[in-house]
Image 1 (cartoon, rainbow, N blue to C red):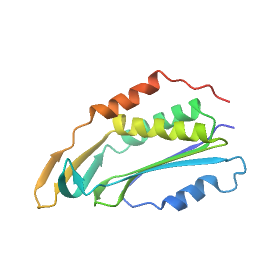
Image 2 (tube, rainbow, N blue to C red):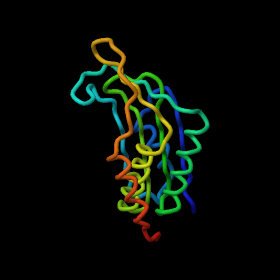
Image 3 (spheres, rainbow, N blue to C red):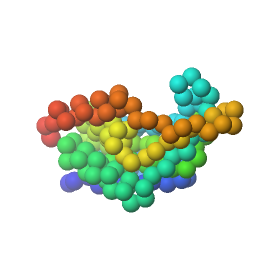
Image 4 (spheres, rainbow, N blue to C red):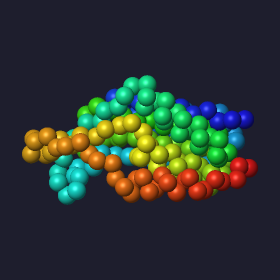
Length: 162
């Protein structure tokens, strides 16, 4: 059975426990669930921030994340995959992104979640703008070379599906 991926881009916060329960409800074939939650930090490069604003192109962002999720489902034996990304103004301590991978075994769940997150950081069409704690507007946050390097390792590694 091929796993279905749930992709949501939303302004509202999400409840991690509820999302795990929704993904695994009634599934006796799930032996491992791996989650990653990204949270807004209170500082960026040592400078305090009051918030981040995340923008995206509706439709394009969902399609790109869906493409990445479909690739993960094709590469690993998953029972389910969820990716939720918020947009709008997000304060320090608030959730930004959630990735959940469910599989019969932990290794597939770990690798799929890592793969999806690496690609979300480097390829998903989101833009971040900082709002400094002193009230000034920060600039748009540039992509990090380290994120591209992390995603590039997956071009080499093609796991064997069980």
